[in-house]
Image (tube, rainbow, N blue to C red; front, side, top):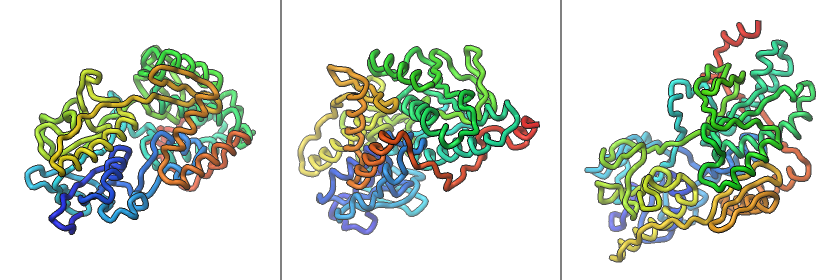
Length: 436
C-alpha cells in the first residue's frame, strides 16, 4: 500500500484472477503489505462464463468482490485501476489512478483473446473472457431472436438465428453444448413462432479432434455428445473469412450468421516496461521460482508466465490449476525468502482435466483414469462448486443447477442491458440492403 510503513516489504500484485487471488490469500495476516491492482473490483470464475452467456447463471454467482475476500486482512489492499507502465529502475507502477511504489512486483495479468489472422475483423466477433463479454453475448443472442420473429427476408432470418463458434477447446465445447440445450428445451418455449429446425449451431475446429490435450476418449465422447444436442461439428476446417454476414472456411464451407463467437485461442497480456529479453512469443519468461528473467524483484504467475521445463518446454498450459498452484507457491517462497530460507522450485501437480457438454454429459481425465457421462458430469459440477469464491456463490450456483436440471429451464433470459452492435455483424446500411 502507498502509505504503509516502510519497515515491511510492499508487494504489488497486478491481477485478481486465479493466480493473483491465490497469491494474495497466501499472504493474508503476514508481515508484508500487499496491494492488488485490477481493472475490475471483483474476481471472475472464468470457467463458468459460458453459463452466464447462456442464461444458466447470473453474473453474481461467478463474480466475487475482491475487497470482500480480504475484508479481515488488514495487510491487503485493493486498487481499482489499469496499469499503464512498469519502471523497473525506480520500482514504480504507473496506473490511471496513481503511481504505486513496490518492493516486489507480481504480474498475474492473465490472458486475452488471440485472433491470429483475424485481428482486422475482431470487432465483428464476440468473445467470452469477461463478465461483460458474457452479458453482451447473452443479450446479443436474445436480441437477434426478438428480431427474427418479425423478419420476412429468409436470408436475414437465417443469419439472425444461426450461431457459429470457432475453437474446439473446453470453452467452445461447453458453450456449444449449452446452446444446443437451449435450442432443444428453452427456445421452443420462448419463441414458438420461430422454426428452430432452420437454426444451425456450428462448431469449427481447425484440428482433427476436439479438446486437444485431453484423452482420445474425451475427444470422441465430446463429439458424440455435441451431435446428440444438434450441434454440427466441423473438424479439420479452418475459418478463413468473415464479413459480418457470411463465414467461409478453408474447405469451401459457407454459413450465414450474425453471431460468430471466437474461442480459438488466447495470448498473455502484461504492461509495458519489462526487459525485452524476458518476452518470448507473447509470454513473460520466468525461472522455476517465477522470477522474471533479467529482474531481481519482479515475478510472473499464471497465464502470463512462460516457465520452461523438460515436461513443458514452451511453458505450462494456460489453465486455472496451474495459475492457482503458482500463486500459492510464490506466496510461500517470498515468505521463505524474507525468513532467509531457500525458495522451492515449482512443479505442476496435474490433478486432471474436465469439460462438460450439458446435462449428464461430461468428460473427465484423471492422471490414470478417464471416464464420461453422468458421473463425470456430477464430478464436474461438484468440483466447480467447490472452487467458486464465496459461500453464497456456491449455494446460488448449485441451487440454479438443481432447478435447471429438473425443470429443463433457466430463468435468466433478461435483456437488461441491450448490446449495441458497434462493430459486430454487418453495418446497419448493409443489413437494410440485404432485407430489401
